[in-house]
Length: 244
Ligand SMILES: NC(=O)c1ccc[n+]([C@@H]2O[C@H](COP(=O)([O-])OP(=O)(O)OC[C@H]3O[C@@H](n4cnc5c(N)ncnc54)[C@H](OP(=O)(O)O)[C@@H]3O)[C@@H](O)[C@H]2O)c1
Image (cartoon, rainbow, N blue to C red; front, side, top):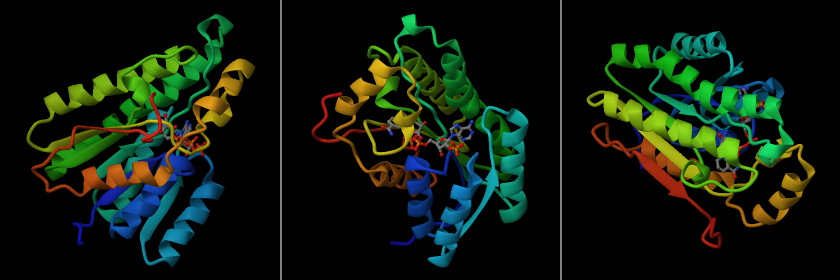
């Protein structure tokens, strides 16, 4: 199959779903611009992609900082001349019951999972409008559709990005494509940030059945590769064996 080569900026590309997405889209001939805080990981990934004949570059990125996200998107445009797709993927999930009062962790989830996505939209929307089109792919979660104990704030952030994504879609008819990809349990480093002992223990059972990150990358690649008049709005991907 052949694909129209696009410039794709991926946030949170240093592990898990973002990393798998970078690899998958590179094999489709897209030019990647990769962001995260762990630049050592990004450097290795960029080298692997380019050694395999793909096109990739990276820049350190903290999505909680709006100026940093603007600089990230600007650097992608300077390097490649445009930015066609932003994959708003960076996320954190330090689960805990509300009564544990982990206010700093609530704030971090809101800052990364919600503000980070808004910063990505703010950084790229004007350029996409000016160039006559673009595509935002936001990684939500099955937690954007349902709430479970210990996940109230995490789910709230994912409900929020689902609302933001739908609002952007409604406001952007004509030139901007908007896709929400909502994974079920997927192999990644996401649960490593859980500091609450009970929530951490519960995750071992909950996450025992998991998809490989490449399965989510495949869903993202599907949305990106659609003809320009086709907007795939929502994709939910769960392991077959999972009820959640
Ligand atoms: N895995 C699952 O089961 C699952 C299910 C549903 C939804 N999701 C969603 O999928 C997305 C990707 O997560 P993952 O599962 O692949 O987990 P992961 O392996 O932990 O990857 C998370 C990525 O986000 C980046 N990140 C975190 N804070 C950041 C910040 N302030 N600025 C920039 N990048 C930041 C991390 O990079 P650095 O630490 O290097 O900055 C990392 O690359 C998240 O939005 C998550 O909520 C995952």
